[in-house]
Length: 248
Image 1 (cartoon, helix red, strand yellow):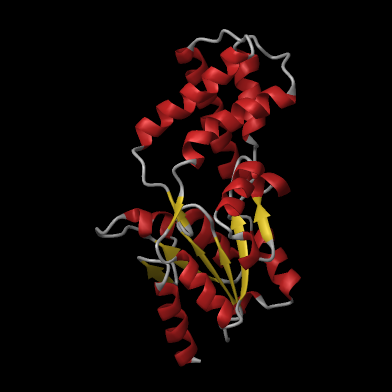
Image 2 (cartoon, rainbow, N blue to C red; image 1 turned 135 degrees about the vertical axis):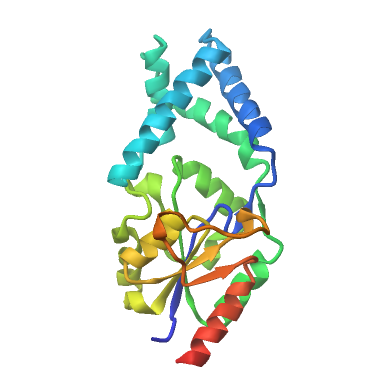
């Protein structure tokens, strides 16, 4: 069936994060701790880091089983409650979460061929949607707006705003319904096999693995999730579409 629409992931698919993970982690926790201290909450660094990472790991396990999104503001509130600082306003916790995410936000940047690829896909009249897993919807919107991505995509679906995460097939099928396009005519492009490619297949769509963050070495396929195609740069999606269209 002729491809009529593409659903893109955001992080590590349209934008990249060229940063040492451990250094970035330290900066993020330091920024959150600074925000807490500014509000007179004298939490100790190791205790705070440990509590947040404990709840992150716990909720990671939960959403792997039920595919629900657990917002970061709730995770941070649970960590603060565990440390004896539970009576805090949601606005304060949101401020701490924003401080936590700020060092990461500053480092994201588009892949070199992001905009030329999106422009060409738009020129070819493909429908384009954006579907991203995110524990903080405002964080995702700030990135989308910062890079001028909003006008390329309709709809834009962020897991923290809808309560479900990829690979839940309903997220993909709702986009197909909004477009009035059959799932078989839609391609999903993303960097995570278990979220993007598995979700695409559960919804009856094709899945293209954007393997830019996987490095240049041999690729492995855990959990028996096999993409329909693999790209090492975003612009290669045009080659994949050309090949599939020539096979129709």
